[in-house]
Image (tube, rainbow, N blue to C red; front, top):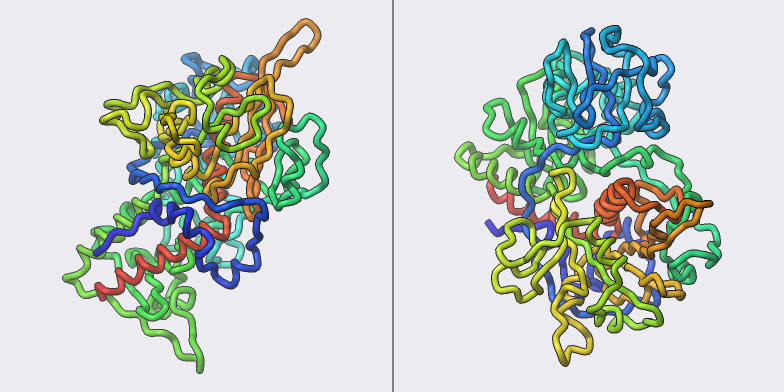
Length: 570
């Protein structure tokens, strides 16, 4: 069976971008960018994703459902909470507003953990810096015994396939690791009616752009690009902020977990039903009265719970009534084909778990107005390299054995060095830094550099501190580039205090939705907060771009091809 790689799908080739068949329901959303030209770059192969480690949350809420004396270990020390839980109406607000230097007043010996007793420590930054002790027994951050109160992770969210009335579903912004979510799923009794459903897929909230006129003022992006449909985030007022999306650390993190491999593969209680006409595939765990299921369709993949007494073969969400009230009749797979089916489903699932990212970086000097000029830059200011060192580590490519994002790690054909970052020990990020890529003599169009940066969804545009003109993203001609982070170093003088930082403007092409974390100001101080903000926003930028009509249509085409191949095993 031929392999279909989701990354290969997204790298469909820039020369074919105008020929993509967009579904009618998506076509109405599609806008054109008048000034964007077609450029035929070579395709950069993207590596397969591998297994994931757990993502730590921005703030940590600990609410075990039993009483216990406890201490919190943060940055190698014990911190005792001093803010009563009754005064913490919103733990996230408490996290955002508390000072790292605050000393909690209530002694740890007097504190008892219960469903209604919580605190948040802003000092916790990574799993290695955080742990919980219950009666002096230290628990790992993402262990099954340290998932917190089960009720804390549910909220007024909307399931993609709703279950029983008044059922609460997972609040996606509170999910931070596979161990956390799977621990809650494992503790849930699926033999009784579910008031809290940790299994079913929930929708990602979508924010809206304000689309109000923006003055050029101190903005470093040319605001006239908005006339071509580009969306600009230059201040806290750029986004309407009508949803909880602002609370998300990494969006769609729940989609990065191997539900099929963990809960269905190789189990006798797993049953498979498929309609060869609609290509809908229903995978069901029959071991409980309320059956956990995965529904794979050409349009989307869903997790759902089949109600009590419903025959999976007649589940209307998977196999709806057709004309004349006739229901499509799903087929089951021959037992001899089940092992091959399981391997294919696991392979498809692993392909969809994306934790490897590549971001382009270009350097723009004062007075430069042409794309070829940007890609010709070899010498950069010290501020640029300081910026790159904050985002990643400079690595020698020869012999590099982590994610290389298409760069040559054997013969050095794509340069000697690059910048790499392992973010939260989960995401592998390789930066395609244009000044570090080969600059071949006689190549006026700098195709070797464009070959890499031109195939990156997200691009960082670093402006030389001497540059006065705003940057116009319409100059960049790649159809694949969709989001631009425009950065320029800027020093602020506040009285006798001199603060180094960066002006940040974020720009997206049409049809891309806002993504967190959102700007609170166009200027940010250098330091850990800026680095963490940038890395989260870069990852979320690419993830949100996958909801763009072009990428969404491509993904649906891939799912359809995968299901066609699976149907051959019926």
